[in-house]
Image (cartoon, rainbow over all chains, first blue to last red; front, side, top):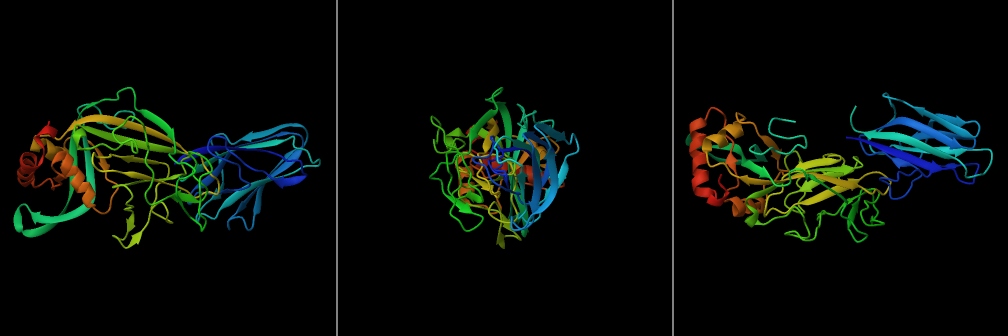
Length: 128
Length: 278
């Protein structure tokens, strides 16, 4: 099983916060974290930061969100777009073994304005 | 794609479809009636034609409403926020779900037929998106049959192990009602899409025991689907007998041709309804 989900969210009018990620195809509503289906891997195919300057941090948890570890940070330094695609070799960033694995994305920005957005293309797969 | 299936995984006209019963039964050894042996049975069908050529797809939402009952992977009592939703950390109630449709034989279950449809057989591939939704079929309806170590432990959709993600292939027999289980272990309420690729076959049971034998030992190419059961519920055998007159052919080793032919001939002549033979 391989499923590509496109997670997207705007920043809010705050200097820091957690993105409420949503996938318009499959999610009824957004969530501030995504709990992995048991036994699946999350692979990052691409990320896109757009709007005004902000920093996004991808963090993972192995205990259903009690503790997080930052694993990636992307910095949009000025207004525009920052994007990278891992064409053909997506990066496994979370591998579920007991179903308590969670990831989230936080943001930080100098001004408390809701003018930016993040988009992640993530593959959820139970295959190698 | 095998030689008997097309690009949709459906059996081509003139091909054979075997539906295996994985539950091992015990009976007399046909070559020595003093010995009791264990064996499997299978239904063997010849697909004369497929009615829905050039129309294999059916796509719909998950058949849930805000009133649908769910069980929880945690301790909550989950409910769907809207029609078609699968709540976070939830899986369907023991009774499962069925796909309702107006204008069909059983409007509560589009795949359900009665024994008068003995000449028809659905072959269904269900793919659910997102693919990390757990999927299962209960045959008969509402009876979870997933077990570990014989019947020691119940497993399946609501358990830590023994489930399947995203897709399933099944053959719903006339008179054997099925229900469908779906599970969502994520923390997000999902809006799954159910995509069916199905064949409505015009079928019959081969009247030639030699053909049945060749199909079951693999000399004649066929497509095989296994019933999603671990316990042979009486409702299944009764439904098969009501529709076809028999609940299948014993699977013989390929060294027992004569015994197999004798038994298959007996099944065909004394069990099978003549209307189902081709």
